[in-house]
Image (cartoon, rainbow, N blue to C red; front, top):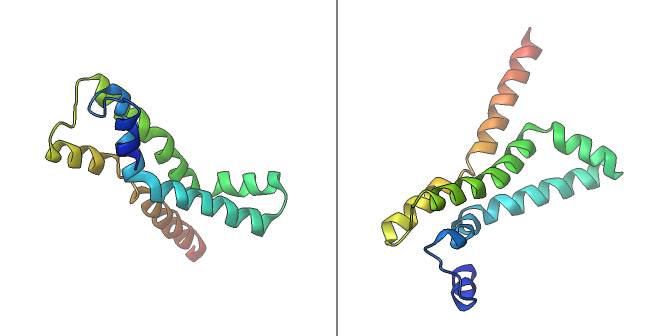
Length: 121
């Protein structure tokens, strides 16, 4: 839908202005998970200031937000530098590079291991 809608609107999906398309392909689940995490904290913590405190001290949520904010910048820079996904292989490579959904769980796993090690001492 994003690709089709962009083409219909006259966006050059292979050019710099189409940098956002792989972002939505690769990170739609990441964005949804981040919103769900925020809503989970909202239900658990109650007031917005407490929710935000909990959200911004949770390593998984911070990593997720960082991925959501950094990936479009990387995609834009790659397009400005001349990268163009004119083949299916290039399109796949661009989407794979943008898909950093594995990073927040890895950060969570590392944080949990560190917490466990501290508790053992």
